[in-house]
Image (cartoon, rainbow, N blue to C red; front, side, top):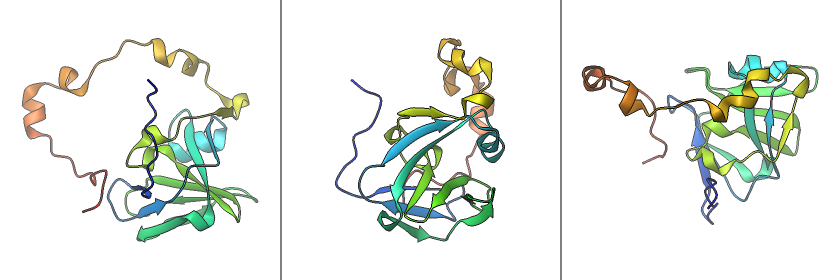
Length: 157
């Protein structure tokens, strides 16, 4: 069984960490990719970003709107100006690439291709082989008792 969730007939939703910006889109992404280019590393603060490109007409902003940054002469990136969450990448007027991490269910965007290989960090190839643990196992119970998230839930309502 695949780790990818199956899209439903209802809109797919997502938004930023604080909940100030929310979106919905209908249909499936035209393309999903993982990009390791240096611009994506800087924009996402990590070794790569994962995107799903959707038709611009299928996307609606249901709360707030992203702040836009012209990251190059051809591309604009959208992010929440309140919490900084990266939300979009756009270089075509008819399509918007949404960040997988901003989806309420990020399993929906499974990369079909890898881009920006010239800047890929060599250690990313071995991520899946690293030992791992769940938050409940590595976070001491006394810290868990004090931990209260301020993150918007992965849904509205």
